[in-house]
Image (cartoon, rainbow, N blue to C red; front, side):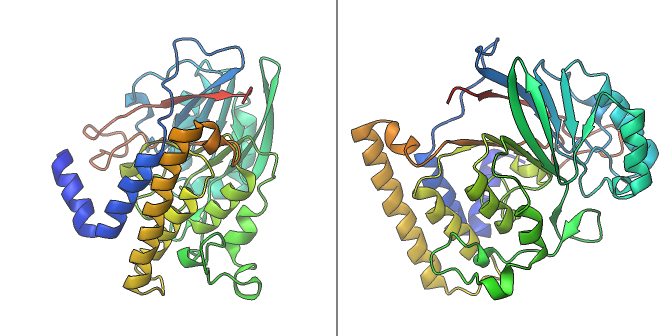
Length: 338
């Protein structure tokens, strides 16, 4: 798809979201491109997701300290497919190799499969709603991984979709203790430990590299934990890297994303009023950054880098056949000194 066509499609789909995303992007600082060699305080993380049986056809993986695969290694979720992907993953040279499942990796939902792959591939760490503590060059990281995504079809590792307008950080959110605290999504994501440095999930959070399909409950957990790095995939067309600052522009943008949901019980005037709030906060943030410098943004809390590492495109050929886009991995440096 040509870029101009994609822009027009986004504009037609939701003028509100189209404008909000551009206002929000205007306030964001780009993620630095990694240097040839990481600094002594950096840990280099190689991120990949959604290979869907195309692992052997992907570009060679860059060097790094940690290799993370954020799920959908397979297309049909069979054990032979999974073993082929894990054989490829296990011979990669990275000292630490971690993977999670995705909605296409149905065989990982079976206890026998999980027991088998942990024994058959000792060089790999498989995470399913648990934490790995890894040490790289005398630095210790806590990495939490989960394969779960909001319900879509009858795939594996899914939970009922959490209403976007129930995100507790929204102004006048409809979130209440009685009706949402026991939602499966809340129970799942509230288990992420606060000391998590790197979060690996198959799906994205609401509003960030998600094309409108992210989870509001996962976003709420990001606000609580604020990991240094969050790696995911699932939404192939939303591949990219973003840095969030946890400032007052971000919740205004996320409110627009939540209210733009077609099922949100919010009137059009309220949606556009929230957009006006976003514009006001964005202009204020830019003026503050100009006057006070970058410290004005960092005062809100440590930054988080978000990576949608989906490595096949929407035109992908799945099952390993010819055709389709092969985009490889995304490399980020986690600065432990910040």
